[in-house]
Length: 146
Image (cartoon, rainbow, N blue to C red; front, top):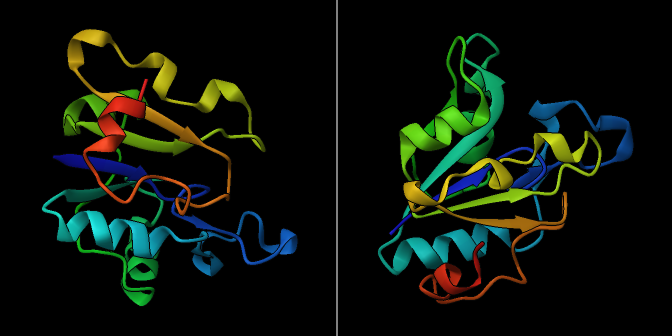
């Protein structure tokens, strides 16, 4: 199984409201490192999707993932001319986990834009709410995803 997790707002979030858009200062959301590590240990391939564009320093996000011991995995970003849904289609995960984009608007949520024939399931969690509430068994994600 391959899980693609959005970074900003889903896997990581601001340590305070004053640092809401200061991505390099972001810290893991509640229970996220532990949940992803558990799924990785079950054989799941974990990969990440950042809001940073190809020219917007995705390396800062990679550094944060390493600093906080997130499981190793490819970090994907939008290439020139791509939207988020294009990246998700390119990566072809079994499950996409993203947040509800409460602060920037529902139009930014990817899951409603996924096409059934792609076979990608989407799970939407509260922005900055973490992944602690998701099942420990990675296989259960497929039945709860839309």
